[in-house]
Image (cartoon, rainbow over all chains, first blue to last red; front, top):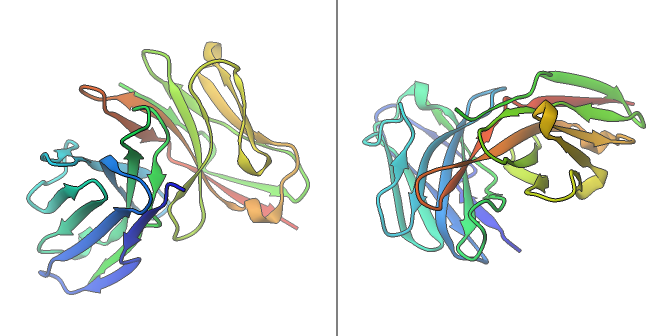
Length: 118
Length: 116
């Protein structure tokens, strides 16, 4: 149980285009989803917290107009990288917490999306 | 501010040898602590967690971790390492956000290599 599906697993796009990444909780409802970015050989940096039906909360230094997050349902959150540039190339990972779990319960992670901007 | 430190960036052990990965945290209240493992190009899998109670917690794949409040540590151990344990390991602390939401703060990770 507690499966999080992330799509696509990898994507290559041209500079200036936008890319959408989907994060779905397959067998549970997630009121909160988190988006992380991971640079090569580095840790996961939290980009934003997505709450169903409300605006996302962005971490300091993350451009909300560039990284658009939508959490329209209890099972789906999307991250759209707008006007992508090569420096946006990274590994993006989403995670979700079940609505029925304690707020400190473990997160369930997707398998990540490798974005390469050429 | 909350933070997690994993002093060892890279560790190599022989198959069958014991393993200990270090983790130190900084958090003002009782911490909620986690260890996750990441295989190349994959997401993260939870190994174990500590919320309260017994300070020695057992996880999956034969891993265990011990919470030591006096040392602000939560080191991960395994008595006998298998080649399939080669991966990157992340320690994380649950940090309280506004309201009832919590977020995870990750350490920088320890890359484990296993020699035959």
